[in-house]
Length: 403
Image (cartoon, rainbow, N blue to C red; front, side, top):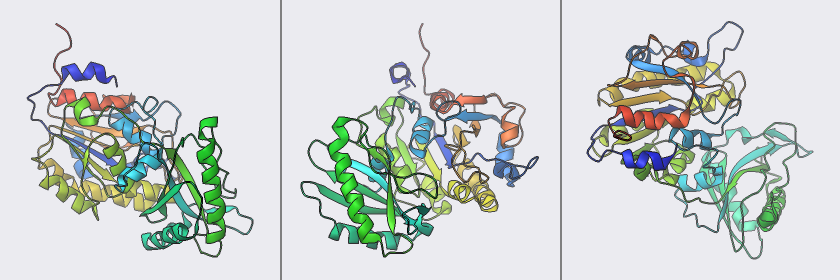
């Protein structure tokens, strides 16, 4: 989105409300030929009813055939072209747990993982160890690792995830990830992508070398993987770019992080979906734009747990009347990317979108699912970053362009 085009058109007296409800990893695939996806299998009477007065379609988070990470996928939903506005997951993780990331810092998202006797990864998530174990392991590493000339920060994030930050002079974050992303391979060494990042890459290699020795007798978290090396960027802020006072509601730190990165206010982490919807209700009169994030749809997709992903979609559908009772002017229900249980990973498949607005032209689609959305008025590959200006228009927040 070209922010220079949007900004002069922003209405200064609009009072409308926009809700973006994101079920992470929503898009799916049938488990067998001729079957239904998770969304098509789920019983979603409230979403199906809303579809009757909405525009339906599928969005594309990055570009055709490109599998999105969660960070760029959410930035795209927020109206930022992710090929123009790139940031690593490390910065998002840092902001998500309120770490005071400095411009000279290099941050990385870490996974505690399990490796075999040959050092090959057998579980990238160490059995999804509880956060309490991550807290202990982070403290252990901080106590024992010694790298002169640099400050090291380690913070548990959630379950097997942690944040690594290195602080020093002359550090750059263009470093290749150590996570091979598949099982049966050893973690990769941290490699600088350019000469300016060699100093930081050398520090990361030494950190991993020492961590390997310290963690070798731990189980199942006997090694670690590092992804998304990043430094904090300077970008147009969402509230100013789109003229809306905005609030993010999310259970997981990374998604609060990406919201903070673009300038949204963030609620503390909720414990469950019901609490998220309560936060929405309690803050409805205080903000213009709301981002409400649902995580478990993605987690169960990555686990290959088709029935559990279906159940999470049904839980959200049961809570939808609470959002509708607030009478939003625009309500978008979608995912950031597809995470088919069949594939146990993110995928490039376009993502279903339900776009409700009091001013929209309803199409003929009467249910919310991948096949149904193919027939919808939004089309089957609308760029995700075009949803935000469309929401502003339907909310009466954009003035006419030109005379």
